[in-house]
Each structure stands twice: as structure tokens, then as C-alpha cells.
Length: 57
Image (spheres, rainbow, N blue to C red):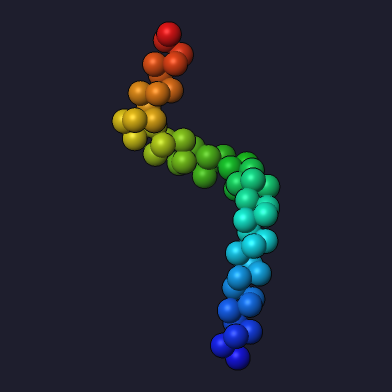
């Protein structure tokens, strides 16, 4: 029983890794989630500085 659970979990992780960009596009296609992710990403000073200095240069 324990080994079968391990195999199922590992298989699920492989599938998620293989389709990670397709999953990410699907999740970020939802406007509310996209706004939340972008808003919180821009709160990180390093990312914000890199984005806005590249636009101003």
C-alpha cells in the first residue's frame, strides 16, 4: 500500500513538471489570480527595480 502511494505521488509530480507551463498559463488566465500574482510580485524590491530600470534605460 505504501509503495503504491509513493508511485502515484511520483507519477503526479512528473506530470505536473512536464506540463508546468500549460498549467501556469491556465491558472494565470484567471484575471483575479493574475492580478494577485502581479501585484504581489511587484512588491518585491529586487524584481520591481529590475523591471522599471530596464524600461527607463
